[in-house]
Length: 377
Image (cartoon, rainbow, N blue to C red; front, side, top):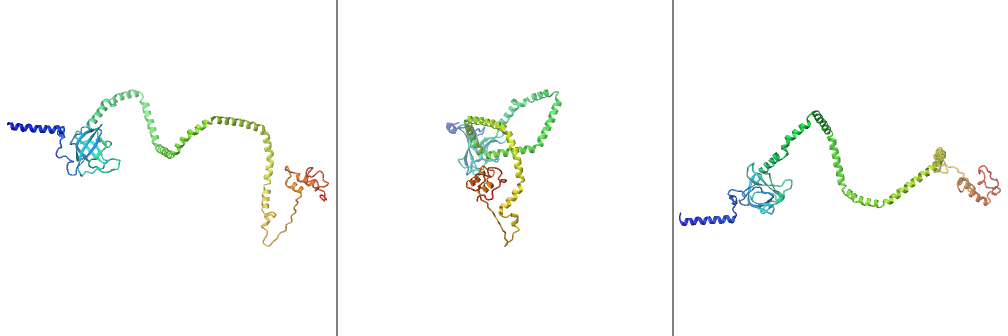
């Protein structure tokens, strides 16, 4: 090998070492591989945040609906989470609130990033160059290693290994109690049947409770106001506690006094009620006459029953005698009252009842004591 060729090879190796050192060589994946997606015309770059990117590497595939549409170009740490940079083909259209999920192609396949529209949320905007999928929208499917580790924990450290011990304990516990166990199962069967028969009633009860809860929810402002008002009302009652106690004590004394009064007067009260009976009976017997008198008052001074016998052009005669002497007014309006005899006595003082001493209004029965024929002359 000539000296010139050795110098050329040495210079080439130095250039390669310099490029590797400057680019941060991490294996073949550190370089862009030919034939990958996301490098054509109109391609754009986006980023996504993940709490854990598992073993995903640069040049990993980016897929939409199991179709390769891009490539992971950079994996870096950003604070306490990972940041993936991806290039996407220009014809890929996704909403700005799309999700990014790290998945595995098959059981032992490679990892990739799956982009998809959001679920349960309306799409918004459009992914473009420089868009960032936030940490809340980035997640990862369980890997094969994680699934096997969980299964190993279940089989080795979980309760599955205790099934034999549990089975033996149940066999020991139920030994000799087969009839009781059979009866228990039958009773449970009957109970479940009854519950099934009451399904509609249970559903109706739940609906009623739901309706009640809805009504309470509708009345929430009223309930809140009541809950705020009740403590103040209780505070007022607490402040007036002594007054209420005194009032109840006085009410008890009043009740005792009332009971004593009723006990002392019950005989007289019963006697008065017995005397009131004939009066009410007489009033009831006079009912028809009172009714007829009311009909007479409506057509006074004519009798109502005779008014219908009149016809137009006819006439009736009416003769009235009005005695307005004081004694007659006294006898007609004040008999049986506290003013009985006052007008008659006044009339006597004026000389109306001469030679009639004492007055008929104060002595004897006025219906049987005759007046003098020349009285007042």
